[in-house]
Image 1 (cartoon, rainbow, N blue to C red):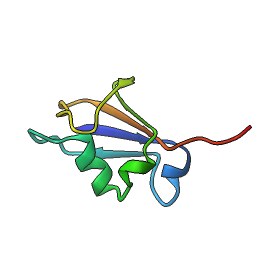
Image 2 (tube, one colour):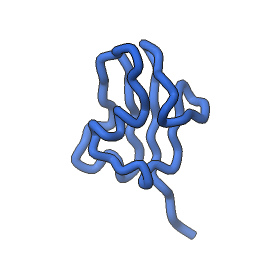
Image 3 (cartoon, rainbow, N blue to C red):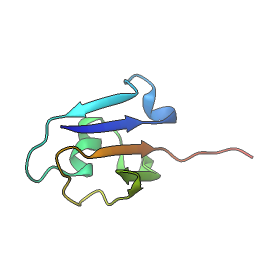
Length: 73
């Protein structure tokens, strides 16, 4: 199982956390596509709290955190 934590505007119309069944070769790109999140809208992609790459294969038990760009000033 892979746990996906969504932050800020990614929570709109979605749950705060979503679980995906693990399968060999699953990637962050697959997950964001399934969540209907555009790659250009992902500012920070973390795997187990560390900077990750969307095309790297994930492992069973990984925790993914997705953050959109944050504005303010």
